Image (cartoon, rainbow, N blue to C red; front, side):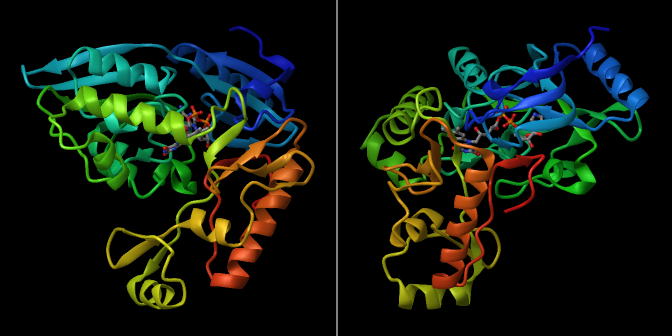
Length: 342
Ligand SMILES: Cc1cc2nc3c(=O)[nH]c(=O)nc-3n(C[C@H](O)[C@H](O)[C@H](O)COP(=O)(O)OP(=O)(O)OC[C@H]3O[C@@H](n4cnc5c(N)ncnc54)[C@H](O)[C@@H]3O)c2cc1C
C-alpha cells in the first residue's frame, strides 16, 4: 500500500480555501486502496475523515487522523431496456461531468442538478437538490463500504433515509458507511421537472426538453452563485428551516414579504436567505476576511485570509440574530470537520 502523506496541505480540498492540513492523507483511487487505507488506520487506531472535493466542508486547520480523498473513477451502464437505464457512477467522479456525460448520451433525469460542485460519492450524503428536484428520486441504490462489518454492501434508496439535505450518511447510524459508487435510474424519456418558478420563467413558453433545462440551469447558476475558484464558498451556508403550518401562518402576518416554500408533511420551509438579508448581513465583511456574498445572503465567502474560527464566529452571530428576531433556529448545512458545532 502507498504510505499516507504526513501533514499534507489539504487547503485545496475545502470549499472556503481555509488553511488546512491532514495529519495523514491518502488519495483513494480503487476499492482495494480503500480497504488497505482503513486497515492502516485500524492498526494505528487513528480516526478517519472522508472527503470528496471538499466543496461542502469547513475544516479545522489540522484535521487529526487519516484523511481520505475519495477519487475512485468509473461510469458504467449496468442495464438498458431501450428506455430506462441503470447507470453506476463511482464515488470519485466529478458530479457535473457525470451529469453532462449522461445528458450527452440521452440518459436523462439529472439535468436540474447540473453544475453542483463536488463528487458523485458526496451527492447522496446531503441528497443534493436544486431547482425543485432532489437526487433521491433518481437513486436506485448506494454501494458502500461498511466500516463496522468490514465489508462492501448495497443500500437501497429506502435504506438511505433521504430527506431535505439529509440522509443516513449524515447521521450517527450511517457514519460508518463510505460511499464507493451510486446506481442511478435514468430514462431516455424522462419528464422534465420545471416546477421551480425561476427555471419556469427562464425557459419561457418552450418547447423545451432535457437539453434546454440543463443549459438554463447552468446559466441561472452562473449568474447567481459565486464561482468557488474565484471567491471561495461552500454554497448555501444554512438550511431553509422547516416549520409547522401554524408557525408559518403567524410568520406571514408578522413578515408578509418573507418567502415560504412547500415542504414535506405538515411543514413549510422559510427562506433563511430572506431572514439574513432582512437583518442586514448581506454584503458585509466580518471577522477579517469572512463575509456574506453581496448577491446572495445564504452564501458565506472567504475574501482571502479567512479562518475556520472566523467562519464559526460569523455563523454564530447570524444564528443568534435570526433566533432573536424570528425565534427560528438556523442549521448549518456544510460538514464541520474537526470543529465544534456553532
Ligand atoms: C457554489 C456552490 C453551490 C452549491 N450548490 C448546491 C446546490 O444547489 N444543492 C446542494 O444540495 N448542494 C450544493 N452545494 C454543496 C455541495 O456542492 C454538495 O454538498 C456536494 O455534494 C459536495 O460534494 P464534495 O465532493 O465536495 O463533498 P465534500 O465537501 O468533500 O463532503 C461533504 C460531506 O460528504 C462526506 N463525504 C464525501 N464523500 C463521501 C463518500 N464517498 N462517502 C461518505 N461520505 C462522503 C464528507 O465527509 C462530508 O461530510 C454547493 C456548493 C457550492 C460551493
